[in-house]
Length: 136
Image 1 (cartoon, rainbow, N blue to C red):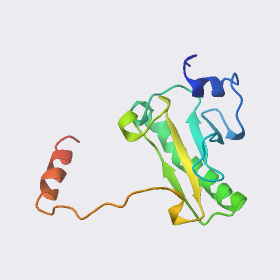
Image 2 (cartoon, helix red, strand yellow):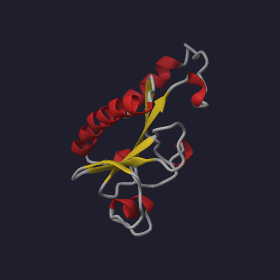
Image 3 (spheres, rainbow, N blue to C red):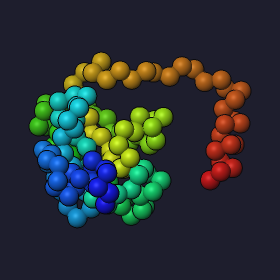
């Protein structure tokens, strides 16, 4: 745990949060800067900066928990869909260097300003795929 990490402070109970769920590995609470009503976070109790740092066994538990929380949030706030989002690194929008995922209930498509992608250059896709495969 890090005393300079706001999520570690929340996990330790030194900073208040509106908790939704907790167990030995995770804590879930409402986001204080929500994108939609019911937007919640799931954090690890232990400090891991990003997804690449989290043990695989812990990550394997995270998605079923997100599913359970999403189902509860959909019913709880009357949403029709949801996003599960994990930002890794500042360039990807990670604001707190402690692994967390967002469960964002959605009532309308326009609630989040997500930009749709454009057509791919089909002549470049095989090379991109090769670059990725070569690094697995």
